[in-house]
Length: 311
Image (cartoon, rainbow, N blue to C red; front, side, top):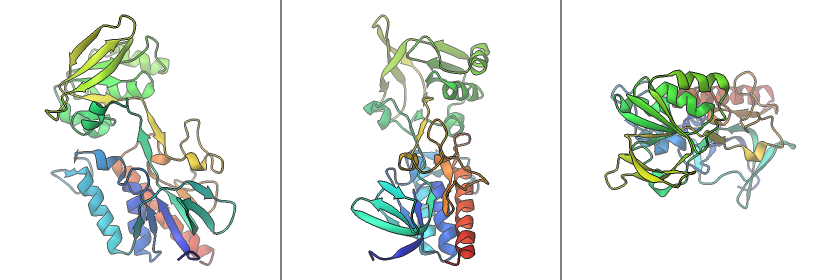
């Protein structure tokens, strides 16, 4: 109904958004979940998830997301395809523009996540979850004793490389320049590690082998000499950062220098009734379980807010 006012709209359908949907639906708030650009979030592109509690043998990422969605639907959550183009937080109820539709809501849970930055290669995209990853914490274990590559030159790349030394026999850090953006302490720590080897002035041209559905090598090019060669490796980890999906709130909510939403008391933004959870506000942990935890917090805060304001 065009004149309907929602109790809560949840932006995003990853772990944080789905957990918020489960909790708010059980509280009889009839949440509307807008699925966003990447329905299911980053887990929908992950294969085996082994570190989510309750699944001793692991669970496929898309299956975990689908289970959480079914759970939310069972309690009455409504799902709709679409993403928010604009958000008016200056009036009450808030107004969200989704395509040609305007949705009015008393509260908003921003669970729109953060998108990993990729190289943009078709072969890279085809092998996500099959040796191409943007999360060392999630996938490093699968490459124990193997030689792997990390792409990037900032603190994210150094952190990924250092973490991966726990599992890999060798980590090659590939960067397109000869200078690194990483802080001196992180760069020095990586350079001092015997398992980490640096390959500057180098870019990835292709990831192999798509037909085999596993990473076997990278086609590399030296940007100074133009030399092209195949570099054998078992995995490629992207360490070039993430982009929080919060562009529509940059003028109305407080963000850090990289666009992540700032929160206080865990999930509160600077606007009463608007909450942020998951990777859109978390640049530190970026795990499915922490995203779910903050989704739970946001839903509980919504319930308290609506009680206190008489809605």
